[in-house]
Amino acid sequence: MIEGLIEGGVRAGIASTALLVALALFRRTSAAFRAALLSLALLMFAIAALPGFALPVPVLLRPVAWSGAAPRLTASFEWLVGVVWCVGALWVAARTWSGRRRLARESVGEGLEPETDELAARVRAAATRLAMRPPRVVVSRTATSPYVWGMRSPVLVMPAGWTARLDDRSMQLLLRHELAHVRRGDTRWLGLAGWLAIVWWWHPVFWLVVARLRAAQDDASDDLALHGECDAAANYCDMLLRAARLTLPERQSVLGPAGLGVHALESRLRRLMQSPESRRARLATGHWLLIAALALLLLPGVSPASRHSQAPALHRHSHSHSHSH
Image 1: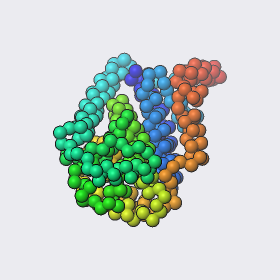
Image 2 (image 1 turned 60 degrees about the horizontal axis):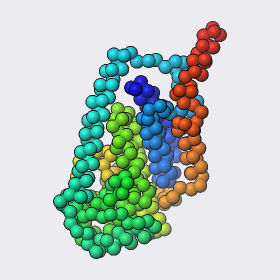
Image 3 (image 1 turned 180 degrees about the horizontal axis):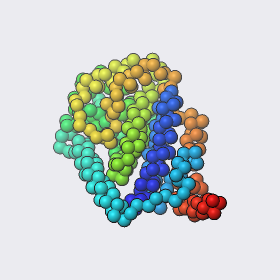
Image 4 (image 1 turned 180 degrees about the vertical axis):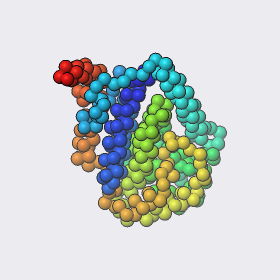
């Protein structure tokens, strides 16, 4: 099991690193496209964690050392690695469970206030603007910033008192941003990342993918909230600054709720004011085709390369080389 997990992690890491490098080279791509590619990378880690699956890596990305039989771990060393992995997995699982319980207390606990008619009307208006059904809204006295969470039925959690501290325009833009996360399905991807962290807690590329994904989701939600309003960027930046001043310092894990302060506020403000041409709310047809091609190339079960099918071929390749010498 451990040996297969390491091999799957290496393959997923190499393919994900290639995607990260490509995104770094083409920085002016839309946030929606970046989020889609990073979601594909996360999906590769998800499939690599399943038993019996292996992520095929393109020939150009395979190290030369892979042309022969892969070295196997000794039984004692594999046992030691397994113990270390189990300890780390239990620790991350405990943190994940604790974080989920905290979010559940903020959305269904005793510190809730009744939703006002004014807030309900604003949420309905924001949902109508995004062509979606409004999610369930709770007003929490313990929450310090607005966020949405939940994989199946996302909930919008609003801190008590925020409706009175923000003007109507700022509140409307803030609600659009939070509802854009729901519209895009971001909470499902982050929820998946939270559970995958139990398996891949040791993998640095996995954590880099998650961090980049959260940043791209925030940017894409900004774009969706501003869709159709080219002159609203200044008001949107003002809303982000107002919300940042209202938000108290939080001790959130990397896999906390989608909301304000996920990545550097300065970079978000700079992007909103300087890159109007890259703010596309939805993926273009060419982007969908490219993502589909990458999925066919990288995801297991679609490409002809897989761990089990490659083993005999690699053995024959190594055997033929030994005879040729």
